Amino acid sequence: MAKKHRNPFKQLEASLKEAPPEMKQKVMNDIAAAKLIMDMAALFSLNVGSALRKLFRTLGEN
Image (cartoon, rainbow, N blue to C red; front, side, top):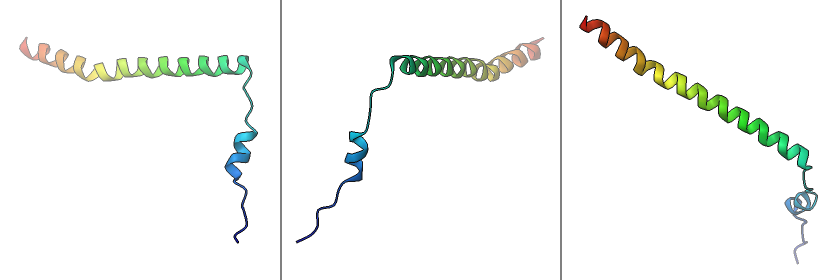
């Protein structure tokens, strides 16, 4: 008969512990800050092309 092998992933899962609330809050704050920066970057970078097109379109009409 074949030998039973231990599943290393089950051993890893058994060693998981709950993170402290302070650490969870710090991670959530870091994620929120990163999301804010990405949203602001998208807001400015996506609208620049449109704004320049409108600017040149209005300058061309004069």
